[in-house]
Length: 134
Image 1 (cartoon, rainbow, N blue to C red):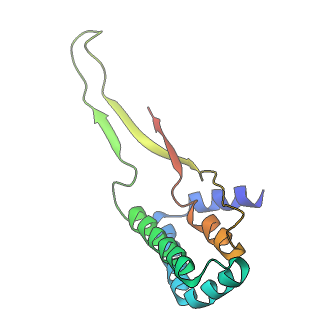
Image 2 (cartoon, one colour):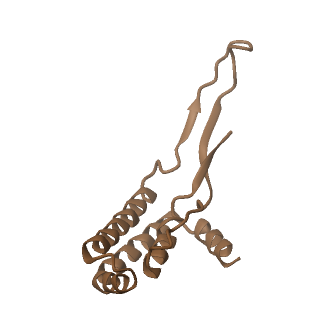
Image 3 (cartoon, rainbow, N blue to C red):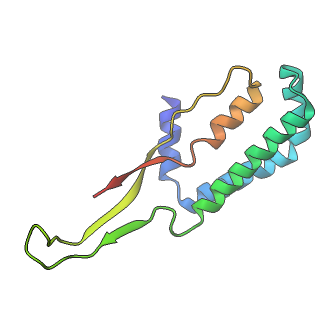
């Protein structure tokens, strides 16, 4: 239930607020990178190289999602112009667009350390799956 409430709150937030939040998370991740890698290394023994790469990938994805939220065509509307001919060739103007619904379900392998499972939970929801709406 907490996740559903958080998802609703996140969806209601302005795009600029979501963009700022993702950038802030990425900044904090960068600042805590060494500590995070050491903690994950003690939990998983995956090695500094692998874990540093995971932090860098997560940072990149957070910043990419933040940038995407700032773009005006994030959820484009496609317009098919009206055709004035009689049916079946004619049709009214049709508008289609993507509508964010909810975060996509995901799974994190059990081998991941707890800190990376947390980061996966943070980084997945910002880009909701969408459906075409008529």
